[in-house]
Length: 172
Image 1: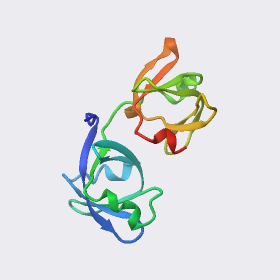
Image 2: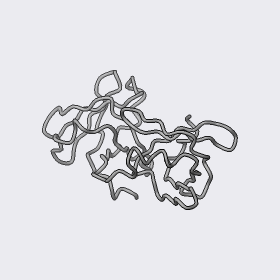
Image 3: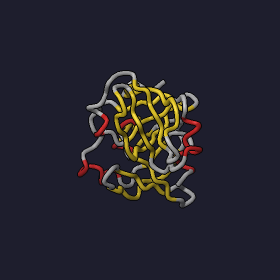
Image 4: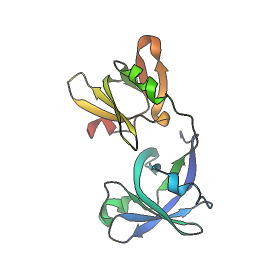
């Protein structure tokens, strides 16, 4: 498993209400880190899958209520009950914001040596930075620019190798 940079937050124990929120039984009291969390990883079928947090609030000393973006009902989160929740540990940023523009024109490759496409634009959103990648078929693929997804940058060959969750390039 590639959880070296992730900290086990806890396990989803049940659904909370009808709006798509879940209850997480935390491993230890981490209340000082909760307000700053923007995303977590759920372990689904042995793979880490990133989820953006709409809100997270402490409901007790070891209970956390959390709602994920784009999940607005209980049936959408039912499959997550029992999943482990990992928060990202402290890791230095891969590139400074000014240096990101240097990635335009880089070839994005998957960790399985599969070509995803060429970076055409760096999109600076308030919550995350996205890479706009044009595939060989002309399709635009948006990929989150996160240090945990980057395996290697080869500047002299203009290649960016990323570890992408399965299906990420298909949802754009």
